[in-house]
Image (cartoon, rainbow, N blue to C red; front, side, top):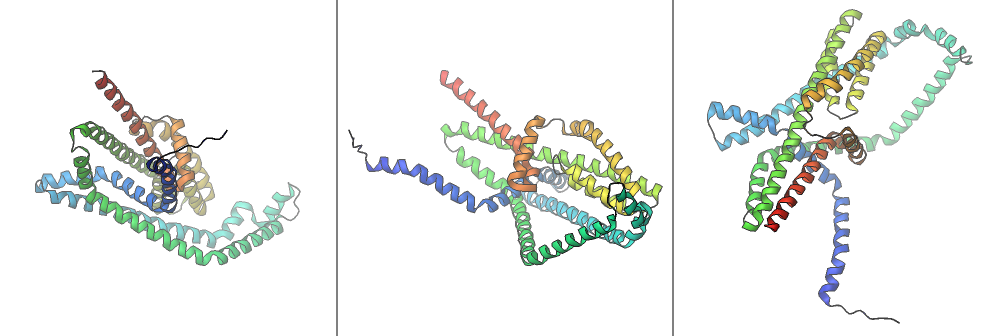
Length: 373
């Protein structure tokens, strides 16, 4: 027995508006994903620069008096300091990496002869495993590999150039938005509080939102500041190890500074950055002296255990109060969703989510208690 369900026009519109709205949101997120990631990265960088901006503003206030213009000058000055430092680090590291690689290629025959006894030594080593002519096998492998690489490079050269140009454009846009967030962010937030707290019945909600945002801002800025401090210690340690090894094995002591900067930069990547930076420095030191590279790897791994279990927890002070499992889950999800950028921002985002959960629970408790009264 069939039944006819009658409904009015408004109910019909409300029923279908939900799935349509969900679909439109999905389309928007799918099309604007890259742009939203760039905006999020800009906000994250602006929050990370907040402690430096505050210190510069205190300096200006102390020496030139309190003035609203000093806030703008502080933001611009702090921004320029960071950009100049990053540019200087890249300018130092880049030539050293290129120079060490080219020097290794030039000195490879001599290093190969000393380390492995030339091709005779390689063939002798191969015969231990039943390979009569390891030299020929290596030549064939290298030939096939080089031809495949050249074919890949040739087929993807144009797309690679356009991809690099696209990456550069995105980086420039993120840097510009970061500066604008530093300059206009405080006024935007003040306007938001005025709108949210304009009515008495909304004041409690506005206060809760404001408290949550302030706590999340502190989470990001504190985490980044502490992470940079630990990264600097890590860079100084690796640079000192390379310097001592250079004195013992007779390669250029000037490698110490760029090697330290490499490990410092990669340390900013949670979980895996320290391993990547240490591996890269080991390879570059290997170009100068293979034995020194092996010693560096052993010493750096030993130091990293002390750093990760003593130094880093002491400086970070468990500021985010997140368990290692939560941190690993956050980094894994962030890395697979947004790549390197996701891995970098995953931990502070997890801290912000924790803040939102705590503030939501606090808000509900207050609402329930007020309802009972």
